[in-house]
Image (cartoon, rainbow, N blue to C red; front, side, top):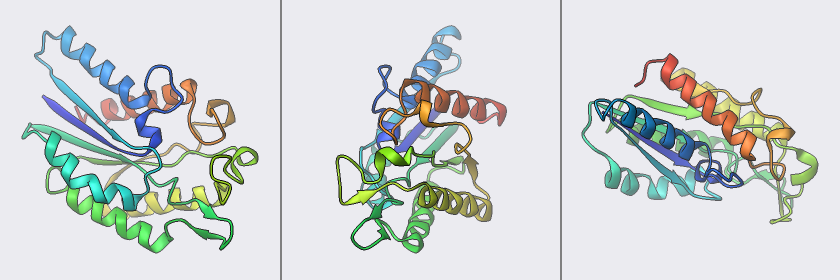
Length: 208
């Protein structure tokens, strides 16, 4: 049996996908595998995505939600996909919503909490934005998504994972503007691409 817990923001929650997002696609895929093996292989997938979350927001709810869904199974996998909201630029100050140093500290805290439950921890990198549509952000004109900042925060996730001997899934070259619904959130094609990337990673690395 495997227990897969996915934490993050609106990308995890599944915004703009008629099929519920890449995490729900993962869930359906592994439910089908359970059925095909008559539950000799059994999988649980939990979606802990919440729109707008930064690493600060995720830390506030992480332990409670993890405790509520954690099973003492042979295989527990935690996937964390967060950071694009941290990288937002506040236009008035030209500063990131969550400063880079604090962002890295929060990655460390999330890792420490996760390792109380499992060593199978995966961070998912950030995808590029279509800047002309989100600088400024239409639903929050005081802020902007800027590719330079998104790439930097993605780089910090990658560096952190390398230093911490953690798995990291790179998305920068997987998605482009044709995979985006509004300049930042994946559309149905984008969620399908992330699903395939994560599924292939789990199977190639024999996590399950």
